[in-house]
Amino acid sequence: MAINDDNRCCLAFAGDDGAEGATAIEDLPADVLALVLRRLDGASLAALGCTSAAFRDLAADPAAWRALCLALWPSLRDVPPVTAAGKAHHHRRLFADAFPFPAVPVAALPQPPTPAAAAPLSSLQLPARLVSAVDLRQGGACVMSRAVETDASSAWFLGAPFRVDALAQEGFTLPAAPIVPAELELSWVLIDPASGRAVNASSRRPVSVDRRWLTGETVVRFALVLGVSGGGVVLDAAVTCDERYGHVREVSLCVEDAEGGGVSGRDGLAVVAAAMAGARRGRGAEEEAKLRYQEFVKGRADRKERKARREGIIDLCCSGVGAAAFLGFLVMLTA
Image (cartoon, rainbow, N blue to C red):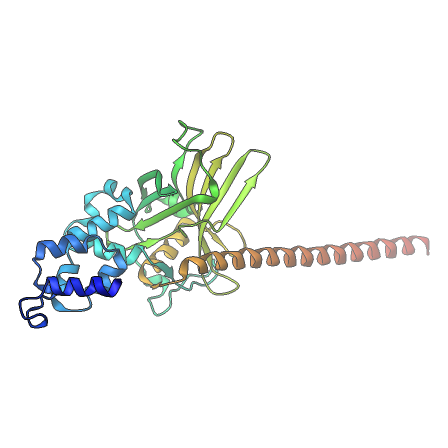
């Protein structure tokens, strides 16, 4: 049936003599092709632009890329215009930066993180201001969409642990449908307005769902691990839900090191800058993100266990030395 349909489509574009008068897709009016191309996803549109010079121009249509970006990240509507000022292909570059997952190996902090095949930390230009485009969905429906600006140049931000809050409330009106934590999807895009570069800072789907039975809250993590095996850092985007009332209480982004400690704002900015300048991962990266996070958490737990065991042995040795010294003192007194 599909073959017959294809034959009918070819004949529809053919003249009286059949194949000789066939019309190619390039013969369609440009405005019709532009409408068709706007129905493609970003990967398909980029692939089409590589097929020919004619399609390259059509696939570079700024309106098509803007529509694609706004469909994926509605919060970009609230991003200040300065981000796109003077950049005709801003949305195409934004999609290329923010849609794939970052693939930047960084050294374990507090050593300076260094991207592969890129400039060292000392030469990285740290963003003076960050714009977070945050979109939270459940079952395709938008739960929260907002853009948050962060002054990343202040001494308070650089010295304090890296943290960006997209939502911090004690409670608000119930949503149309109760929140189901495991069904949430999060997109957190960090944008440097000065350079126009961006990076995806969340895993889209949850990598862990932790329930706090005492408070009735559930913390859903959308984390990305950047680093080599046994070290690195994690971009930890967390959504806190209140299951008693079925709504979201808090949405935040932090950066933690391999030991579970918070990373300073300066070091966190270095990680973000390295991720913006580094490579991106292609297919299968979303499932890999969950596996890497599980390995990261397991490695962190193993390191804490070894540290506790080592400290226990040291305490035992110190206690033994102290007991021996005390007994020696008693022997001296009785001699």
